[in-house]
Image 1 (cartoon, helix red, strand yellow):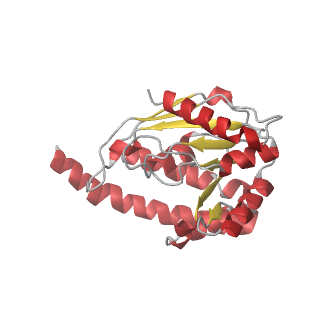
Image 2 (cartoon, rainbow, N blue to C red):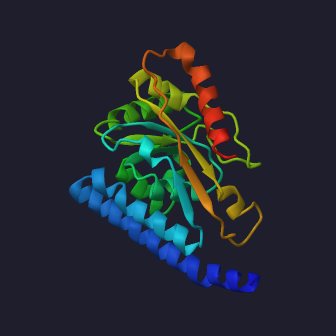
Length: 238
């Protein structure tokens, strides 16, 4: 069985994934250039993510979609377990958004250009001025139901456990008085452990928690807001 899975992933999954990724990137770039990125910056990548999860034999369970209103903008904060976090959120959140992502991803062939044309927000974490400009860009995006998604840990977990949060997303939410929606992601850490050469088919779970209001909150409230979101996400993994 392991041999069959190994052959499938290298001879079927990987070639198909590469082709679909390039096609999605080109569709996003061209569609966003011709018609704007409101639709083309999200829906091609959503389909790409759904296809990827099913090709990898990773069925997805989603809880809590009823907590969201399509016409409302949110700041989504999620734990970061691995690469499949991207596919889970893109494919199954069912809410138009833009990522706040690290600057290094801009250099990825096809994908970086597609992310830029889609309007995703790049952050150079080594440059405070760049971080401020990126947050300002995020402010401009947040309207009419368009939201942003942030991994407040900054990078994927090394142990499977949730790391410490950085305050950028919470600062943005309090500045704009937008609700924060914690998201619990479970499964991607076990799909492809460090050092592995094949994916492990795994059930994935996405839990969308109830929005947390930031009305009347100030800078002084950010630490307790971060702690609350960390606790809510942790509970969703149990």
